[in-house]
Image 1: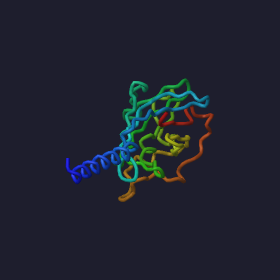
Image 2 (image 1 turned 180 degrees about the vertical axis):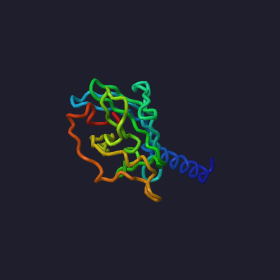
Image 3 (image 1 turned 120 degrees about the horizontal axis):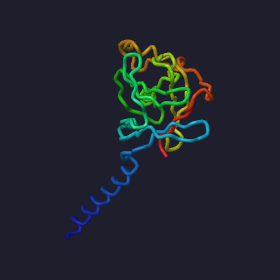
Image 4 (image 1 turned 90 degrees about the vertical axis):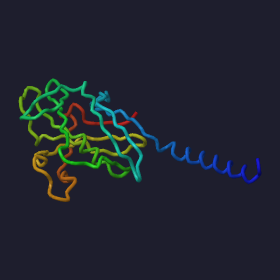
Length: 188
């Protein structure tokens, strides 16, 4: 092999190795999504698939429907986690989301994790009893604390150009003792 051909091959192999090393941290990740009670016990409710994109990740959230009971409440279907006193029903966000997150912006994922709390014995559901998990990164995993909010505002499409109609001032710190799952954890 000629020296120039050797150097071309060596440079090509080096470039390939550097490329593989750089992308090792940019691989698709699959993370468990779990609700956590006040004693630290976790119940897995789904899986989050993160795919690297420029400046963050695109994601796909898959709720584990086997953990939920299917309910038809107030003229629409919900999946609910049934408790003795309260049930937590997942509210699928009804408007388009980009489904992208970054280290500083987790709002799309927060919107995909909206719930409504209701008394288990009640037949209907009331959107003003909304449960919102405000998410933050904690090292390599995402954690969220429970907040309460009125989700009635989602009954009508947001004004043109408004992608995120739930503002920070619409969230109220929740009494964790009133919630069966005051925390959500995404990752190990």
